[in-house]
Amino acid sequence: MNPQPLPENIYESLTANNVTNLSLLWLGGNDEGHLTVELFPEKDTAERESLKEKITNWAYNAYSYNGAGDGNDYGDDINYNLLTKEVTVESWAMVRSVERMEEFKLEIEGHPIKKDKKSKLAPEVGL
Image 1 (tube, rainbow, N blue to C red):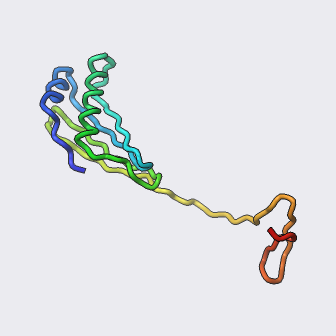
Image 2 (tube, one colour):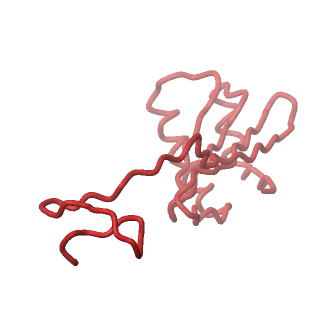
Image 3 (cartoon, one colour):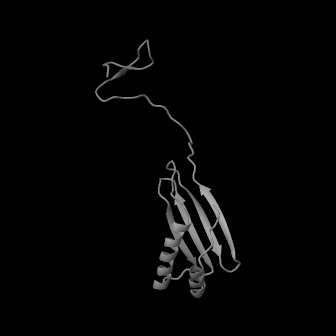
């Protein structure tokens, strides 16, 4: 993912609020793109919350992030460093890992299982 240029008005608002880093944390995987905006250093003010909302609106328009996937989480973390004027992008993904598989006999309530010559297991009563 390529970082998008910051709009000048957002950049000026960030520097006016002494923000040194802006992080856009994108999360996808289940057909919805979600965004978390973080400003550093962290300070809880109404002005910063308003700024986060402005950045969120810009980011959803600037980045095409639909979150499509197979249910496994993935994402992109985009960090705008306002001091060094550099942007880093980290792409990540969670992967399914099977540790072991166990096999069990199928049991059906009310139908005992008995061995049959044609198959290893067959219900006493056909279902």
